[in-house]
Structures are given as structure tokens and as C-alpha cells.
Length: 213
Image 1: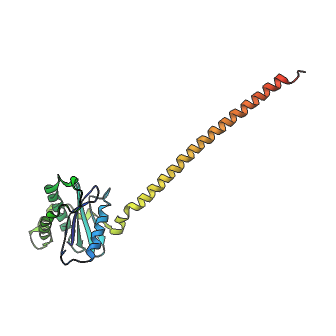
Image 2: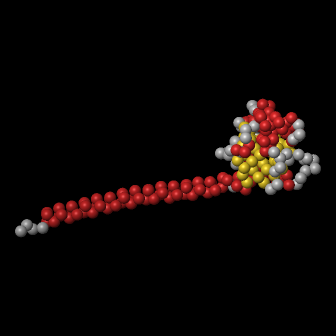
């Protein structure tokens, strides 16, 4: 488990984080952290649990109430353990900070939550102890959880936005066409009335001024 992040669902604000080996640090983790931030911006309408593949790693995330808990793991790390870890961390974070989440305005406000994340990492990363047997009973069948590609998820909203923009443009054009058609119909009606009135006046004048034979 390389990176763990907890963000507020409604706006993607990062509330807490834990980066494995942050003192030494893998420079690539900056790249993956930026990807995670982009994922947080795509949570509207997203599945509540999802795996997102990126290079040699996989993002796993869980949306629970007002927060999204995300972890970056090596592809070989068991998905069931990853999601059990996320469920554990997300629930504990809500238990400790649930009433303050909506009031936070600055990122990384809950850095003091890191010790619990580290404790949970040790528990779920140990594949040889009781933790793995416990995981089997803690989580639903992870085979049903969607697996996507990072590029597909990050650009997921863009195609929809393009379609919405085009639909809005077509709607605007259609509305203008209807208005122009109504105006044309009005002008046509006025023209017909004017022609009819003119013809009537002409007939009246003929009757009045022509000599009778």
C-alpha cells in the first residue's frame, strides 16, 4: 500500500493522507498522488467501490457517506484485503471526524489520523496472520467491483460534457428556429390580412366609382 488518501466527496478536498516511505519517497508517487486528486474530482455519479488500474499499480477506493477513502497498491496486492482496509479506515475516520468534515476548508486538516492508517496498513498487509482470514468475512465478493483504466476514468466526464454542450447548442438552435418560424408565420398572416384588406378596398372603390351600365 503506497498511498492512502481520504477526501470529501462533494468537492474532492483531501482531508487526510499517508504515504509509505514519505521520508525517502518515490518521485513517481507525486504523479500517482496527482492522479488520485483527479479521481476525487470525478466522484459525482461514480460507483461506490471501484478499482482503477494505472501503470504497475491499482487505485482502489470506497465511497462511504461524505468521504472517499482511496489506496494505491501494487497489482499483486489482494483486492479483498485492499477493500477491507478501505472499509475499516473510512468507517474509523467517520467515527472520529464525522461531525467536522463539512466545516473543513483547508486540505490535509486531519493529518493526525495517520497513526490509525498505519496501524490498519500493518493489519491488512500481513498476509500470514489472522487478518486475512478475517477479511474473508468482512467484505462482499470483490469480483463484482468494477475495474477501470485511469485514462477512462479521468476523461469520463469530458465526453459527457461535450455531448451536453452539443445538446444545449442544438436545443438553442431548435428554440431559435421555432421562434423564427412563429415570426415568419405572423408576418405571413399580416401579409395575407393586408392583401385581403387591399382587395376588399379595391372592390369597394370599383363598386362606388365605376358607372353602372
